[in-house]
Length: 421
Ligand code: ATP
Ligand code: MG
Image 1: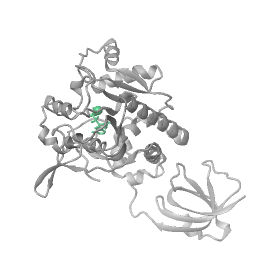
Image 2: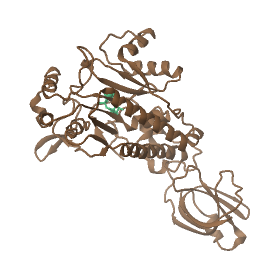
Image 3: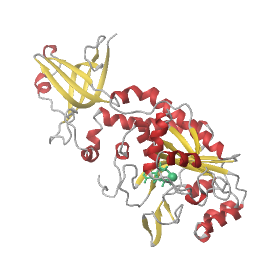
Image 4: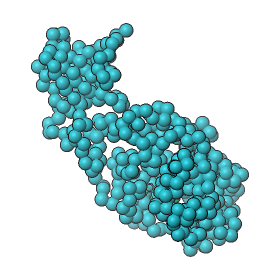
């Protein structure tokens, strides 16, 4: 049955064949254009307007969805009325037909235009889907969604990588992570999660670091051990990878993305095992060293060959991890990383919840407990054993889509050279 409808969007292609016009319009959140078919003879549409329609215009079309679609792109509407809402006054700096590729920089500079291109649009649909799924995943499991301050007095791990803010004459910082606050909340709510931005002031020049990034932070109280945290995070990865594949997998692959396969379980390796693998691959790493990106990548490639795309590295040397990590033994901590395809996506662990020990840990890391007194205070009033993780949402989208640069997953990335737009 044919039915009537209205579409709104931007003209991405125009073809006029004699007395018929085919106008492709990118509408809604669709990943392929709808073809608007206009017949000169139909009389209902002003043909002079149609034949002059400019690429990139914003238009509204009223018409009929035909019973049988002939357009190869799969969607079609036969126009009864066309309204041109806005015409470009300049030639768009990005080819909106998608035929001529623009530079990587211009896809960011003109992100709003790039979003009309299926490939770019798809990445942000994937990101939106992932964030929605994260939210429902945790809400369904009894986690409270929280929002902690982004202007703070102390950093999570010291002062090295913070943006300074003049807070009415007092020195403050942009939050590098919700770590301290989410832990303090464990003294009043059993489980929390937060989706929010964090800021790091390092002069990065990599394809996986930004100065402003979005993270998922999770903290769970009354845990029996780090395994409880690993369990939730692995369920999350399984869930998200399935949802992404189910909803957008074919479309994304069709657009050239090397999408992660649905993950069935997340492999667990100890730090010692990972070190052994790396040294067998020709690295010469000493126990205690953190793995640099090259080592991470090699381990990722090694595991990918075995069909493993997501894995935990657990029981890191305590020395290489922050003060709030609980010690497992003399040398190791209850700390883990989640790596996906050779890139770190999350870090977490069980936290030290015993006031005295935590204070001692701060001292051992060369930090001053006085600077953390508001945080330490929360450990005096019945702080349960707890643990959690911080996960980079930009990194997650990056590794799930298999893109090489984190900037492809962020609308308006902030790096050392990018403050505008
Ligand atoms: P890396 O070693 O990759 O620099 P990190 O160990 O310093 O990361 P964490 O403090 O563990 O980072 O932060 C938690 C997560 O946030 C990381 O696992 C990563 O996914 C993400 N993340 C951290 N820093 C950045 C950044 N500058 N840009 C984008 N994502 C980041
Ligand atoms: Mg980390």
